[in-house]
Image (cartoon, rainbow, N blue to C red; front, side, top):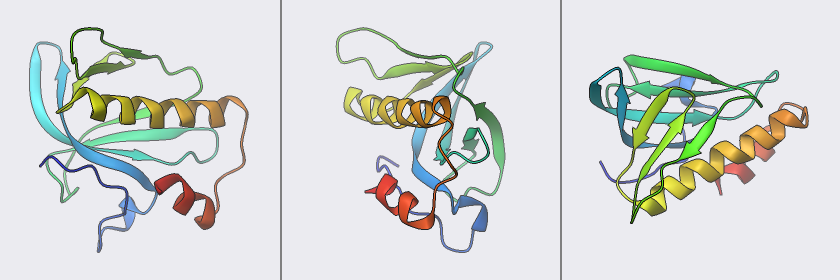
Length: 129
């Protein structure tokens, strides 16, 4: 469960726009759950961060709509791996993974803020590399 992925899941067409996926702890309203998160490319002025029960991506736990106004915050601490997306708190395995997630979300926010066109298949391949 400790591997970040970028490729879509075979046989699950709804993961085709995935650019980053991996396990995280999701904290919300005094509840903590281990979820499999999936960040999707921007389309029509928004993106999404979806949390599933597991890496098979068959049961959604929560879906967050990401826009240029989405609030993201990094939790500060020695080797801290926690961050916030709007009112949802996430904890990943390492501070390195946290930096990857925050960088990917920040890059999407820049594209959304600048009203970038929907990405082509070639663009998505570049985002994943």
